[in-house]
Image (cartoon, rainbow, N blue to C red; front, side, top):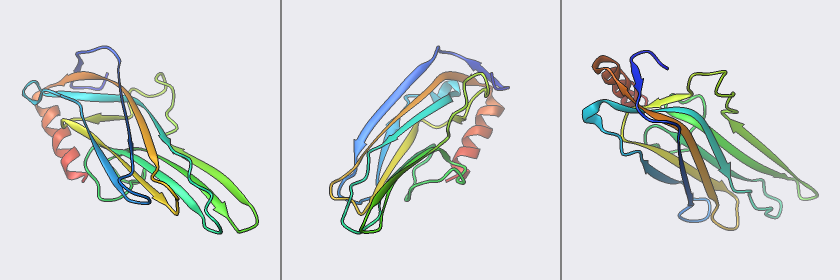
Length: 169
């Protein structure tokens, strides 16, 4: 248990699925955690699962599907180099006109729950999932699942977590 937090629920899984607004169009989905800020409630993320739809084989073009999960709203797909991003997934098809090869990248490749206490703490009332396709023929979908629990933070910890989250935009 992270210092300054008191667990108030058992394990919770939160799942979300959505599709790009149009072909190769950045799209973001807001997921409400229904936290109670009056009680300094936060969500401790223990693991993340992100699934990006497979990109389309498209003539002589490389194609891809990118997904990210973040604690704050974004205008672009995130990377694990961004402090507000909890995880990313990417599927690519490299096509030279003769042959095509598929690749997949996931991060975090979440360690088992016993290896880490948590992978992130969400202090505001929601999190966000982003998707973007590249050179696809139809809009692509993304699914994400967060595993975690609700916790109550002491006042100073809560203030620090909210400020840190808001500054990471």
